Length: 224
Image (cartoon, rainbow, N blue to C red; front, side, top):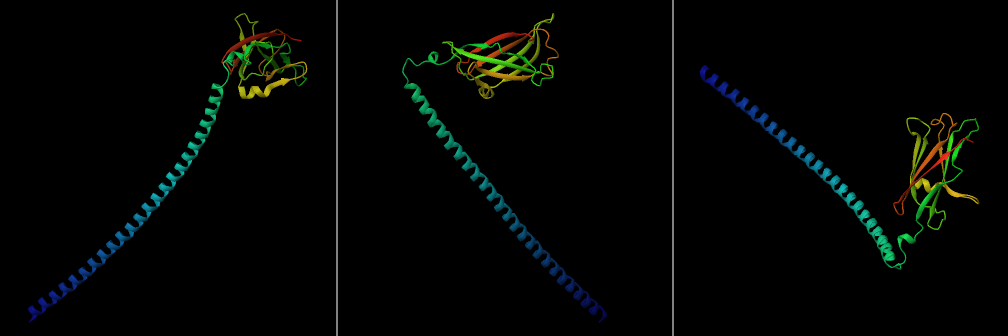
C-alpha cells in the first residue's frame, strides 16, 4: 500500500510539474509571439516612414531640377537671340569699329593729399582716362591694378603699396565734370607712406574687358 501510494504521489507531482511546465512554455511562446508581432509592426512602420521621407526628398530634388532646367532654357533663348542679332549685323560692324581703348592716361591731378588736414599725406588719388582711337575719353569696363613705388632707393624700386580694383567697383568710380572726365580712385596710404619729401611713382595696369588688351602707364608725383 505504501509503495503504491508513493508511486501515485510521485506520478501526481510529475503530472503537476508537467502541467506547470506546459503552462509556462505556453505563456513564453505567447510572449515571444507577441513581441515578434509588436517588433514587426514597429519595423514595418519605421520602414514606411523612412520610405515616405525618401520619396519627399526625391520630389523636392525633382522640383528644383525642373526649375533649373526652365531657367537654363530661358537663358538659352536669350543667348540665341543675341547670336542671331550679331549674325544679322552688317559686315562693316567689327570689333575694331567699336569704342575700344587704345591707351590710358594718368592725369596731372594724381597725387598724395592730406584728407583730414593734420599736416600728413594720408590719401592717394589716382585719375585715369581710357582713350579710344579718336582721342575721346571712354568709360571702358576694366580691372585696374595700382602700385605706389619709391624709385629713390639705391637697392632698387620699392613697392610701398598696391591695390586691385575689379570692374564692378571701377564702374562706380567714373567721374564726369565740366573740366574733367575720368576714373577717380582713392586709396588710404596713412600707414604706408611715412613721409612725402621725395618724388614717388604711380604705376597703373589697365586690363580692358572688351578686347582683353592690357595697358600700362606710370607717372611721377612730386611733393607740393
